[in-house]
Length: 121
Image 1 (cartoon, rainbow, N blue to C red):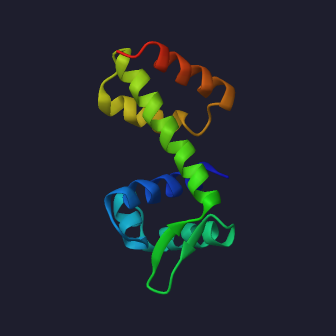
Image 2 (spheres, rainbow, N blue to C red):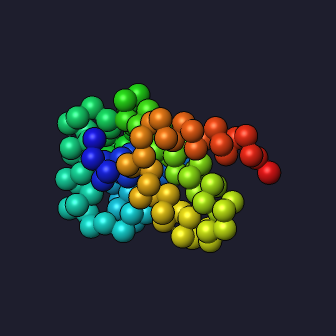
């Protein structure tokens, strides 16, 4: 899966925690993307089995999509926390975590996560 797909899945997960129902327009507004761009991306995610869209246009992550979204969301949270702990501003930490979360290996992330846990404040 490419970074953009992961970002869409993570956004849908975050929106679904705040709203009972998520639609493509909500995703576009949150991400700042045009309706055609969102439509294409969501179509790919649906075709690849990461997303379901019901007759009313409401989005729901499949188990497969949810697993990726949760993984990326956890990475974002842990990396943001680590970066702010070492003195990075919260805004920059969130932006940098958003980039790092897609490329960090599972092994490195596990070590970072353990470090953050071991040094909880």
